[in-house]
Length: 574
Image (cartoon, rainbow, N blue to C red; front, top):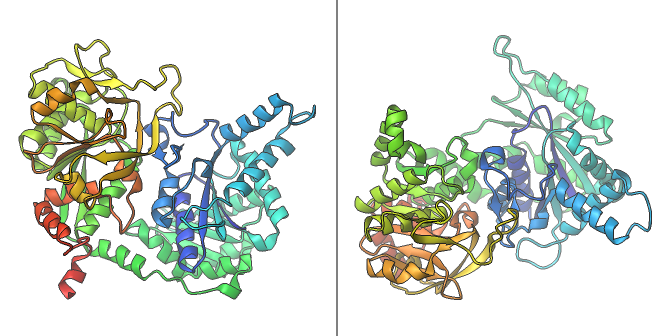
């Protein structure tokens, strides 16, 4: 197994995840099989109990793992299916060691960070690296490891030591270290400063790890003099100093790496020059350039709770991007804080209230994503009602689906106090209830998680047609509340149709409003399986409906005339 370790220095948030993903893309385009591991040095067992404001979205894997959002980048960039063990946290490592200690596995020895914690980290990395993630048999050729945080963090120290030991045990030909660092420019002087990177590399070397490549983040391309200075004082060959400057979209990052021959430097370090082939990134290049050249945009109202931090809904944003590009459109996402739509906001913050409603009314479609807690729920209900009554395409995901059921029960059935038991456990009309198998005492990993099968009840519904007339879909879930099975008959008699159910037939998975151009709610999270070039069917449906093209697409799709509306340029050429 060959290992590529990506570390970060100076400041966090430099884009280590995108850099690691892009390295994987370039290596994969050279014909290598690639897997990825993300190390998060926090004590949490996983990302499941963390607020989106704290750490961005929680990305859910097929096996139900609640992991760091960077694993979403890996899956999207590399088109692989990772496991929960591909995300290592301090909490997981310490738990595994303490469980062994309680069992007596250490035979009376004093359990210490070195060697017991570091050995556990090494063993975890080496065993997970062997798990195939691309649908093929046998282990991958290269494992890209991203170490979260920045070099020098106290919490990262056991991992740094474990990785130092790993680099020694696997040998220099099997280990390549890429250090991502910031090259700032001071406004007054206007000079690219290398000193922060010099200090970061010096600290890394003091801990026993020497970078083979530097990936320098900067606003503008690096000057030759800056590269020369970095090479001289960081002991890295100039050819191995990569510049990842700001680009129009992140799909350009693999192209930046290719243009600077990053693959050659990595192959040289890993002893892979004998199988060195040029990266085949033609399709990737076209995708990046196509997005840059799009001019027509579609206005999407995103009504949620965590709109102050776009990373809170990263996968949703990416899924919208994939769907829009497939329709030759640029996504114009208008973020609306759900609480700004509420009546109370009209009194407390009238300007924000008016602006939120103006944005909603100008949108071509409405999306209400998942979330937890009762803040902003009234605003989401108003958004769902507006979309339903005004024939505006609507997609509700997880909580967004439950919101649409609550709104329908209140507005159409006349049940004014209809609610979810999550928000009002004394509601006389509980249309959304706590799942029987859920835990009320523990938060972590107690939800209905991971890939589950949804059986589509009829082929004559929008969802089935978008999923190519499939009788079922396998999508990822993350919820602990569900639509009340006892209310289904009443809701359906009033016009709301539940066209997707789980294998028991009791859990509602997909709802549609047949009298509406596109009013769809899903209990699962379709955004987690969306990929560049392979957009999520439901997101594609939302964007097509926003432009009034859904019916045409479905007719052509059913007749086998059209698979995707990818790239208008190609259609024009044909």
